[in-house]
Image 1 (cartoon, rainbow, N blue to C red):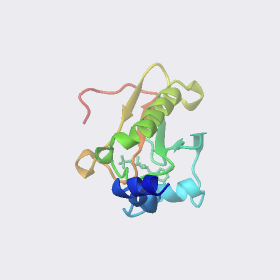
Image 2: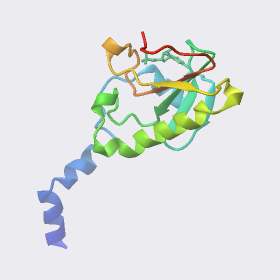
Image 3: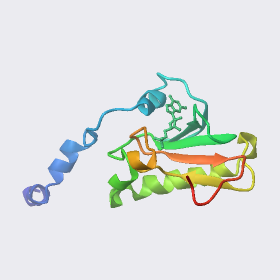
Length: 142
Ligand code: 5GP
């Protein structure tokens, strides 16, 4: 037993437990208030890990944001590590499902975007996937 505990100690596993849940020290964003329900949003999809809601300032007839409920350090995409693979997959899966939901105004095509950083137009530093549809989009993007 002691050996096992010492091995955990040596590998720094206690640190992981100690820091669990507090490793995201970045400033909270407006999305935290949407997650808690403090600020209302038109929620279109939700499960234990992700929340999807209509963008308050849509730039297309259909415009939904998909976010992780637990930001877990993902202020922006480039903060992702291999520990985030599952949540990143869930965000993309949800985006794909939303993109084919005609009741939300999506047609046969969608523009799915992550703005990574100010230079790319990111304003809210809680990772989010934009799912845009209901019109045609240009390429290259502006
Ligand atoms: P970003 O520019 O960071 O990629 O996208 C942030 C998005 O969040 C913007 O499209 C903006 O309209 C949306 N947004 C900002 N505040 C709110 C809000 O309080 N409610 C909703 N539903 N969307 C918001």
